[in-house]
Length: 72
Length: 283
Image (tube, rainbow over all chains, first blue to last red; front, side):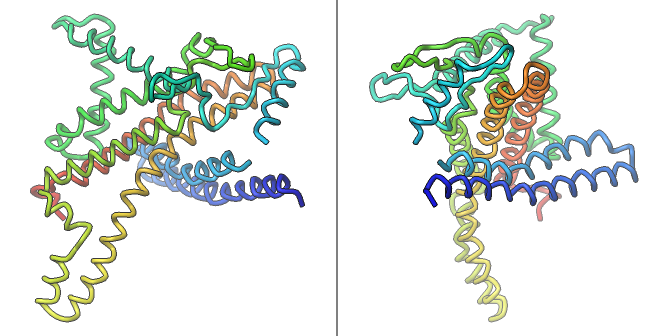
C-alpha cells in the first residue's frame, strides 16, 4: 500500500464523524419540534436557540473536516 | 505532493466547459504575497486591513451621528438594538449585559463584516498574478484563514482571564483553578469532606485545560465552517453550472451570520461566567 492510499483511507475514515453529528442534530431538531408542538407560543425564542445548538453540534463534524483537509 | 495537486488544478482550468467555473480548491493556508519587514502579508491579511479601513470609515460616520438620524444611522441603530437584545437575552440581567455589550458587540460587528465581505459582489474579482503566473484572489475571506480566527479566540480568552481577575480579585479568580483553600476548609470540617475537596482540586486543574480547549474549539469552529463553505462553493461551481452554486452561495449568507452569532453567544456565556455573581442568581 502506498502512503497516498493510506491518506485516502484516513480521509474516508474522517467522514465517520458525520454519524454522531447527524444523530445529534436530528435529536436536537426533533426535541425542539416537540417543544414547539406542546407550546407554540415560545416558537420564536426556541428557534434561535435551536439554530445556535445546531451550529454547535456541527462543530464535531467541522473538527473532522479540518482533519480531513490537514491530511495529505 | 502539494505541487502535483496544484499542477493538476492548473490543467483543469483549461478544460473547463461553458458556464462551468473550475477553479483550484483553496489550500488550507492562505497564499503569501510577500514580506513587509518582519510581517508576512498573506491574502487574508489584505482582507483584514480592508476590514480595518471599513471600521475606520464606520467610526468616523458614527461619530457624526445626529439627533435626527439619516437612513444609514437608522440601520446602524437597529443593528445595535438587535445585538443588545440578543446579548441581554443570553445574560438575562440588564446590569451585567451593559458591561458585556461594548466588547462583544464590537466582536459581532467585526465577525459579520468579515464573514460577509467575500459575498459582496466585486470583492472576489480582484486578482494578483503570482510568481508562477497563477491567479491568486486578492481578498481571501478573513475568517477562512486559521490565523485570524485563532487570534480572535486567543484574544477573547486572554481578556476573559483579566476580566475575571478584575471582577473577582486575583486570588478569588485563581482559586477556581487551584482549589487549595477549599481543600483546607474541607479537611477542617471532616475527613470525608476533605476527600471530596481533593477531587474538586483535580477538577480545578482540569479547568485550566478546558480554558485552552475553549480557544481551540472557538477558533476551529469558525474557521472550519467558513473554510468548508468556500471549498464546497468551488467544488459545486465545478460540478454544476449556475443554479446549484447560486443557492449554496445564498446559504453562505446564513452560514456567515449564524457562525458569528454562535461565536458571540459563546463569548457572552464565557464573559458572564467570569463576571461577579450578585444577588439572586448566585449559585
